[in-house]
Length: 176
Picture 1: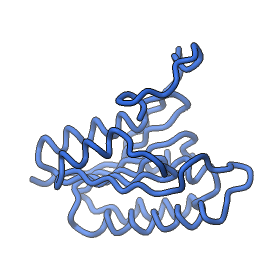
Picture 2 (picture 1 turned 45 degrees about the vertical axis):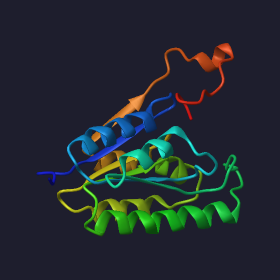
Picture 3 (picture 1 turned 135 degrees about the vertical axis):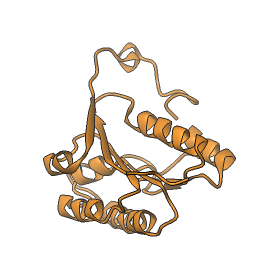
Picture 4 (picture 1 turned 30 degrees about the vertical axis):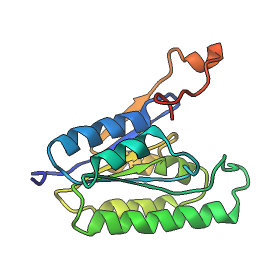
């Protein structure tokens, strides 16, 4: 099965739920036997729950984790973080244009642009390469205005209340 029409979706904002929303789309697509590839930018470490699930949903769901373990220094990114983000962007181009996937999710790509690891113009060029029947999903905080302008759907996650502020840490099976 192939999509009749693909769109560009953006999930951004300062609250939890961006990656979770994208994984929900992936699950729905996999249920229809669509092929999904998620490339995670700046997400070394793990494995996270979604990686374990992808193993069970193969060959329909592929998750490619990129980046180093730990946090990227927003004010002074390490050259290795920049190199890994650019490498991930090249992998994204292959996934998007290679003809294998019906949906491509670029998890935390907005953050990679916001942190200066990627140039927004390079991401816009990637978006322009999207085949008509491929759904492209971009997640991460601080989505650039130019990316928002070319998207078909933009959702902003807004925090109203968050249990982190009450001292609840990231939990296995929920946040990781």
